[in-house]
Image (cartoon, rainbow over all chains, first blue to last red; front, top):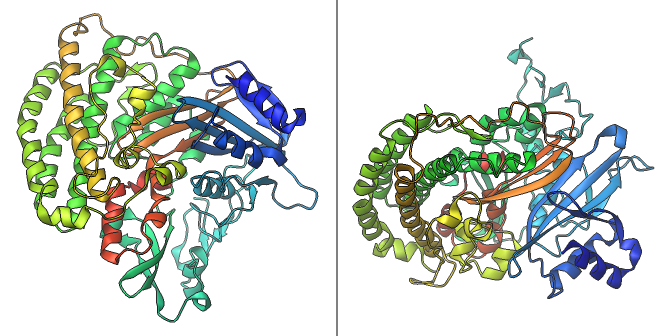
Length: 165
Length: 406
């Protein structure tokens, strides 16, 4: 199934759309070039052959300073076809101007991506372009840093309260 | 070193800095105002803060503010071995801890490649305790929903019946709510001797009580008037917002992961998947969601009966049976990524694992909680309703803040 979806995407967007893939293993995945992810999701959502209408999960992963990459993982599910697919976007951890790494938002495809992406922004520090409401969701709005980064250090004081105990 | 609380100085701006309102005063129309509901509001079922923009009694916009119960589950999981995470999984959805444990253990077993070795008796016990816990969880959902809209009696009746489930599970695991009973590769203990008979007695006691409850609450005229045609969630919106569990089934889609994924021993068991039909109003209203929960109680009873039969017959207790026989000595999955999903009382519970193949701790463990996602649809369906109906809508989605905030 992964092979079919891969050829379908290459037919539509050209061969540069696939960055890498892992065809074997328990759950194979496709890594999509970051600029294409929104278009690819629209295509997978609308195409009657795939029809991935349900976004099960969207998670951000920090691979640590050594690999120096961040990932966004999209676990899609198709209700009529009863199939599952894992997509992935890999971006470098640092940008040239020191701002957060950016990934296009998929809120226009699935409404559920809204809160998932807010969580990924809150925990990993990924900026989702064109997100309607990118605020922190679980941490307080004035929290410093992104807790699930591998090199995260807690701030010393929060509102005059010592954080480390 | 302890924190010296004398250093803390109260400043009024600190409150607004940590959780500021999204709506700005200058953007409001003349007749609108901001109303703050929660975090300590009984109808928010925990600590949830809702920022409402209202026009008189009518809700214009709802903005949920979460995170008051955030206990850093995912950060903790990265620092603990796979088996040590289980007690933390319990504390996510504390009303359905068995179901969460089952999903978590299943995911790690599949990553280790030992999911085919698990003895049938272990799987049947897992399903039995999960379904008992599902009953207890739905009892709280229906009971507190009654309280939300003004019916006090069903709440007390359901807590009385849930007490028996608590006692049963306490007998098996030693704890009343947070069990740590389902382990990766097995169970903490076998069921105590006589558990099957006592469960059967409980089911015999429960069945007439369910009928009673249906007549008392679901068919009650006041209840129908408060819940029917309120908070109608159309199916396309529910799918687009990733709703799952009774919320999605209430909108009329037959989507139950126990049947779709056929995990554990569910393919060997006979049960139906109830879906909302709009008997009292439109399909997908608050009444339908509660009706689906009520019907699922009957289905759980069916599953429990079949499990007891199997546990007393085909897979009965033997002196040599050891529930810890297949628990791996070393829990180090090879380098991989895996997303496991299972049907919890509150919808699809998913765990996304990433393992680096070297350590016995997850490199990343993300929990996809059903009611976190179900809550995100509440602003969409409660625009234009009355403030009192917002309580009814929020209750019908059935959130547990422990799982929303993790």
